[in-house]
Image (tube, rainbow, N blue to C red; front, side, top):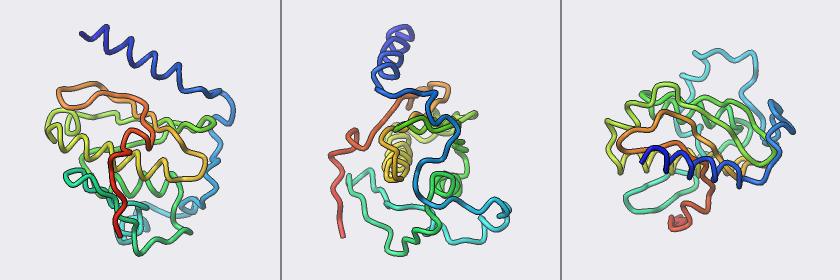
Amino acid sequence: MRIILSVILAATLLSCNNDATKNAGDDTTGLRQIPADSSEADIVELNTEDFYIWKVNSEEKTIRKNPKLQHALLGVDTLIAGLNKIYPEIKLEMVRQGNDTLYTQIKEATYLTEQMGSAGAEGYIASAVINLSSAKGVKFVSIDFEMGSHAMPDVWSRKNFSDYKVIQ
């Protein structure tokens, strides 16, 4: 079973149609990042609502645009910081961005893969992918982590969540 999943994952990664070495390490989101002189304390003081583009409800399969959206605060780093604040048990880290794919990792994924249940894991992945793929230049989000009972690493795009309805 693990071999089959590995083959599927490898096929998915190879079909991603981008040159991973091009723009590696470059921030091509087109959105301003958290200023380099910001400390972790500065990030914690900001309201969580400032850290996402879409509020995702995986039970109702809906997404709602953040009414307090501040474009000056939105970039890949800021969105990841927001996800990490909303889900403090899951620490998502950016690895790099190559062309249209954002590569991320979760070093300790036990909470995601074993404790949230399938619905919780789907909700987290939906929220991460929908928000991160909303950044300019990001079409695919690769999340690497150790596979568990309720989630496995993969490359997702907004199309994976096309059944989610935008509500006002």
